[in-house]
Amino acid sequence: MKLSREEVQHIALLARLGLSEAEIEKFKLQLSDILENFEILEQADTSNLPPTAQSIALQNVLRPDEARASYPVEDIVANAPQQDENCFKTRAVLE
Image (cartoon, rainbow, N blue to C red; front, side):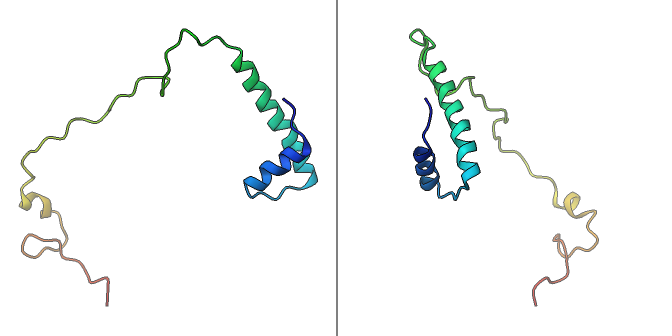
């Protein structure tokens, strides 16, 4: 399917794109090629294929969330440069 110059301008208007004359001609060819590729794909027989949303099966790669005991507070603040009552002590960042 070959697109006309007016169709490319209409697409550009819908996408809120300002195109120069050279860009209109460039996109006219490129968009026409893309549509021709879709026409070729439409010819493929897909009657025996089930409809799918994904081409490959999705699987979760994260482990299940399990409740467990926390690290001891002493271990957490052991390497802190300054601490106060098991809390990290830092300089104030707001005045």
